[in-house]
Image (tube, rainbow, N blue to C red; front, top):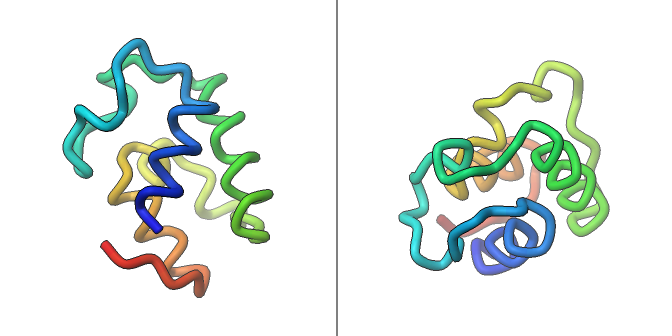
Length: 82
């Protein structure tokens, strides 16, 4: 499942580096993801996993890394092996 998250980051995160070269706990914002790209990524994750992030989860930290995204999805009941 983390491969799916990485693919979504590749497609929507607009990173200037290959996400596959980043550790799963690497800060995506420090790697170059803008706040606008994070919104696009959030929408893509919601669509792909058929979930909706509640308002309390709409924070920078939830989309900060592959691990953070996987943890958020797990909290929403999506089984994401990390």
